[in-house]
Image (cartoon, rainbow, N blue to C red; front, side):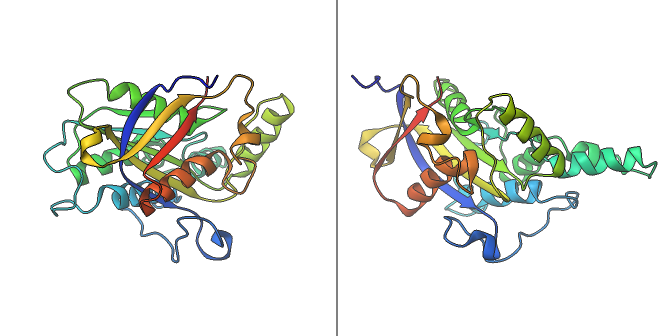
Length: 258
């Protein structure tokens, strides 16, 4: 018998962005142009990617379409990434080793939560912020955390973000070592991010239903979810966000890691 569902949540909004240009051909969420830069985040695309995908999901502050509105204190964010802003971290480390003058802001920017601070100010979010890194299924871990957060009656919604930038040389070597040691995880070939806004499910609202259920025993993540493809561990989550944004179908299921 299949495992019983953990819970049903409402998928209110979603967005996704993948590499632009030829690298994005045929992928959901392909961006036709470079992302706009964010002041203070000039070394890598990690911060601008998170900011862009989250803002596309939440809509423009001050408009009727904005999903935060009066629910700033009741909005939480969960960010999933395996390596975070590796470009900024590696650049700062390399400059330090070379004896070059390093801007202290680079160390601040390399922390994954730093860009979330920008988001909270722009969108008026005052709820809890969480970052998670996992080997098997970071998106599944983030969705599991979001599911638990929504059991708190004081929270109205949770924004789940999955993001990864193109692997640096250090990240590639770490991935090769992990694979040799038997760790099963795949990284996207290039910059990719997706965002999904979840609330408690009410059948009477007509909202898109997301069922979160445990993965079958013995399931191999990369073989079942297409994570060996160009989008790596983000493949399944990006496909979910693309489908929610398109409005079809009206119900989805995501298998969480055991």
